[in-house]
Image 1 (tube, rainbow, N blue to C red):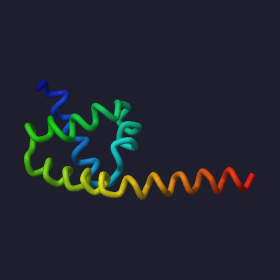
Image 2: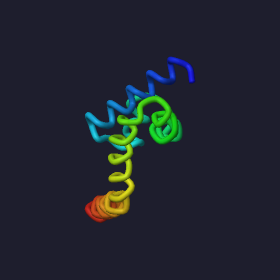
Image 3: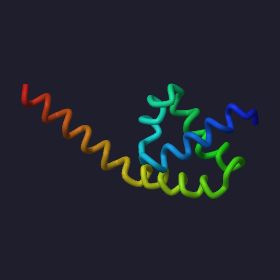
Length: 85
């Protein structure tokens, strides 16, 4: 893995720990795809920094655990806005 990718992976890992943002939000911030962010945090980070990987992994798991709640809330807001107009 080249140094540019390694530094990006570490930067992404530190960023998600500081902010708790989702992969989608991080993709917007870093200007790369969600797939790349996910691959960086799930595969490449494991090779680079094991401790950081475990911290990031717990945040990603939390996001997976609550995604159905976020989706339901988003749908609820969508229909409330639609009915308000």
